[in-house]
Image (cartoon, rainbow, N blue to C red; front, side):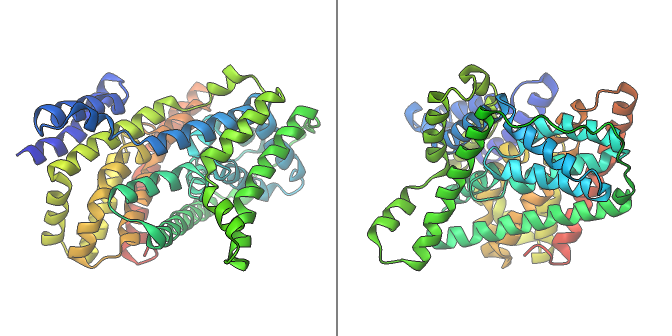
Length: 429
């Protein structure tokens, strides 16, 4: 009975949060405390220890560092220059916008930063060149999510944390993570291609309104140099390790390279050079997302302790075929994400069930986890979800905003169905 109640509490948290406009993570933490201490008899310290510290630190420090690049305008100026360079190849601008969002998210900040800061730029550009706002939405939400699956970004880190919680580790964990990341990026590329073709993205027209951006300032150049150095350090040493596997020094350095810790060092250097305002940069840390992701993670940990995860996954394994299990898991994730966060609620709630479902159905872990994340992310264009809501906020015209609201509703439903098709035909494996 306790297991059923804890599973129910996850959905109740989402419902209360949506209805009362309260962060779902806060409600989840309250449920984690009530069930953990007073139903399961856990010590309060044990419940507090369920807060995912490594994930919290990752989001905090990576977002804080890139907040410097946002406050001094470095990332936005990169985007504006790229668009200006393509002014004579209008058909490529939607593709370029997608690549810019992918790149910014992939550098480490993750999709939330892209949602917040690319949405106004993309929507303004769409007005200038006559680009359909649905294409613009995919350029923001889809590309932001895809970029989040680089090894140094938010989505990758969140899925890794969920898989570690589910008991995965070592080389098998990395191999599965890379496959899941590939599946998610591929799915987002495919839906962009479909939307680009349906809404004729090649027909956009560039007017003279696109002006030459201002040149980079000294501080912006220094910020860009820090970003490049950080990426180079994260990439070069692991590559050298492949060619020099016996080098103790290279192995030690590679082992110690972690995006959040590297970002901490880069942040200190940026602040010492006064490249941006510390307080303003701190505003770019998505504390709401941190509370959401970590709070739900605590409740899921309590549910795992109570055996709720094993119970639900056993039911799926006993009652559904392999194909049905993949479809159901993707549809459930999509429906949950329609009103909530894929990274904050859907992934942490469903991924811990995967080992048992995979064992019972014979479906690969990568296919099931990819189905969860793709189904959830595709529904993220809903105006009730983070990505869709921020994209909607980037549209300043009230009449156009009302039209876009309806379009996003339809797009989110169609996207969930598209995700199910990808899972069904085996594109996601």
